[in-house]
Length: 304
Length: 245
Image (cartoon, rainbow over all chains, first blue to last red; front, side, top):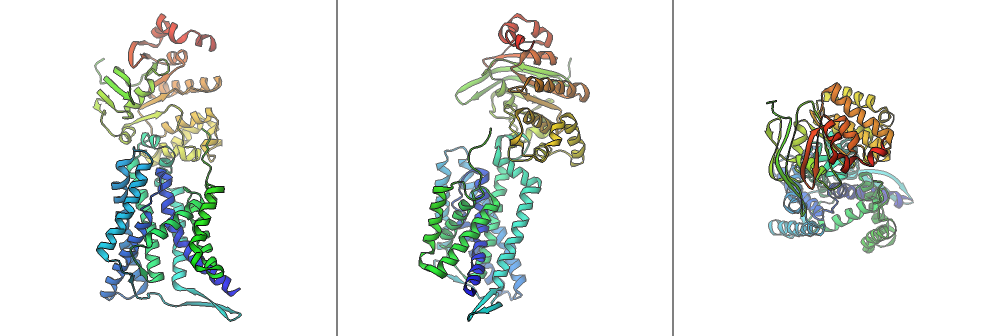
């Protein structure tokens, strides 16, 4: 029982991070119908910038944890959004009218480029930071197993809930959200109505990158270590989450993230930690086989 | 008249893929007019309208709106000048509600006008008010056409372009669409360019008309003249005149 609750908490935390990254995949897919395979590396870049900023703040003597995290978030979101914008500008926009395969390849190229750039400029070694928010609550003890809720877990889960609420509002209730959805449905018509489609796509990439930035900061604070390679696996898992939830669906991305987080957490605890990735990608295969539109996705056929 | 036309095409050529769709089109629309463009399928009518928005862009010639050259203006800057299009196939946003579709039409309009403009569209098409929170993709073809017209009106355009608004509609809806076109012009003074296959209705409502054939204007005149012209009767009205009485 205690073990079960603990894994639930861990799974939720992990799932929240996957969900945040998955939102970026799903938003970009929604608007240009393409998987941005460089998105996981955008997240990695965010984590690396987070380490830099946190280290710098430590050196400057800013030790109040909430302040340090807020400053870090602001700085990392800013720079990561620029990365998101640049990736779209360099790897996608010139290929807007090309075959669907071309931007896919340039996305993978971009992913390799970002990894190598970070490896070359920052080194391949794992980058640690000091534990910033140690401790947490001991919820209860059952059969000699005590269940903990770490402060970092509270932070990750609550930040994710807030971001999800803000994003749902942004997409469903604001003029920008409508323009964004209009681009998803009919880019030509959207342009005929006076909306700058290229700019809307750029903003979408920047928003996706900003969410990945938040995930990157959270993970850095949570685990305390990052390196240039974390983007690949996290990216693929978040991609799995997006597909599981239904690519193009924002609630689906979050739900998919939570499910993947839970599966990893429970699989590691009860079966074998070595095979947790096998479980995750097994899910991807099953979803693609039996429900390609995902849990909350809409089927491709549409009434015209 | 020496006033600048609201819309003027001078020697416009356009290519649609490998097809030379417009071959030196000269056309003008004066303020306050309803002008119709008739022609067979594939004559280039839709291309002519879309070329105004640069989709496809004119490969030669000049398009001017109120005297300003807009031939090379980016697509998204055209509608902000006061031009709205009800496109072929309606192109409403199917996964948005009716109300959201109208909001899309007023993206660059003064927000202070929104309530009054929505009211006007709902008065014009009461069914849209009943369905305002319904997804637009669930509307019938006729209702979608009304929504497309309503969306175009939300931006308070000076020039309204309608591409085959009667296509695929039941006769009752067709009558209503043409009545609305006349009302918009007479009551609100809106300038209208209307592309139609339904030449009979179109020439009846229009002040002037152009006949487009293989990307060239072959005939022009007032609505009445064209209705009476033997070429037009032979090519576009025989048969359809019987269908519409």
